[in-house]
Amino acid sequence: MKGTVLIVDDQQEYARFLNTLLKKFGFQTRVEHSAADARLAMNQFCPDVVLMDKNLPDADGIELVAELKNSHPTTQFIVITGHATIKSAVLSAQRGAIDYLSKPCEIEEVLLAVDNAMNKKQMNEEIQLLRSVGTRTSIPAQSGDTQPARTAAMKKAMTLAQRAAGQKGPVLLVGENGSGKERLARWIHANSARTSGPFFSINLAALNQQKAEIELFGHEPGAYGNAQSRKKGLLELGDTGTLLINEIESMDMPLQAKLLNYLETKSIMRLGGESLVPIDTRIIVASKALLDEMVTTGNFMEDLYYRINVLPIHLPPLRTRKSEIISLAREILENLSTDLGLASRPTLTREASEKLMHYHWPGNIRELRNVLERTLMLGHDKVIDASDLPLSSDAEGSWHITVPFPQNETLHDVTRAVTRQLIEEALHRGKTKQEAARLLGLSRHALAHQMKALDMFS
Image (cartoon, rainbow, N blue to C red; front, side, top):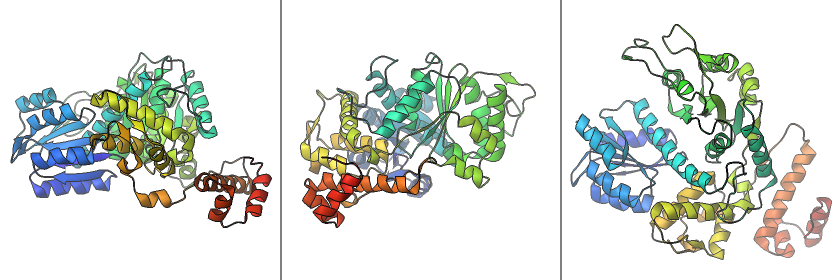
């Protein structure tokens, strides 16, 4: 799930078009047709982004943005209108909207606006997180109070991130959606010698290739149909800073070749340009796909892969980082308390903590934050119990494990790792070895034998 979007538009056919479009591109959506229903949906759905029609039957959309922004400060608002004017565009910005679109909107225009709003929301959250970790030379704590017991995979990722912050070359971040790739990229930038320079982020999955090329490299006047002036791309705007390219697996071959040329020459040519522009922007790329497999199938340039794979950092999914979930939850609650103006940070009961620990988290850290924000918005802002958490009970009963297969390990090594994970999960759920053995379909003696073979002691 890329994020949650609330669509508020009394034109049902147009609202249906936006709903279908955003769902197709991985967003979770909800549609309302009036201000009254929008107010109710804000508290129930707690969206990341709101697409707000200016003219609603029971309210002015721009004034409604101001009202909802006051009560939901972390949500990003985009105003859409069929009667665009400069005055209303300025007023929208003054009332708290991040963007202003004129109907009928191009598909790429809607996706780019929503993606930018999502990035803005995530950036604000991550700035809060970065401020909470202390000095810029420290590894970021995942908790508001104490250093959590990180998993081995996360310790390795943070060690590599610390090394990347002290270097100049490209960095490759690999992990599932919502696993914290952009957060880590911002941390690398903030802890590097480029911290005083700009940080930009672009998600290629939301753009067609021409739009992606323009956003990255810019264009000269007359480069295409309605290009009336020069536009600097993010590579040029990021000079002396850092550019994060999200979902690089979505980049087509010609654009891959242009990016490779920049990495080798440290210069770009704007679309329609005739001269090279020297720049110094550090590139961090993020992918949820295994790029080496794409190289094998011919869908990713081998030369570019080796150029960006100098320092790969694999971010493990949240479901494999059980020891960090509660620390992360407390940190997120701390930041949400500040954003929502709460008197103090809400506390989690033991049952709530257990429920968070047992959940699979397919949406990773992003989903964890969304669940906690919804919980607070529903009024559970002092003590959070298990019943207050909007989580699926079906997912809690399932067992989920991740099976990595590094190149330097054998099938025997991986099998041992999987067996260990299953036993650890059974021990956690069963509380006693007898119950754990029952969950695994083993005798207590057989379980003890397996644990001894794996050097597991308790």
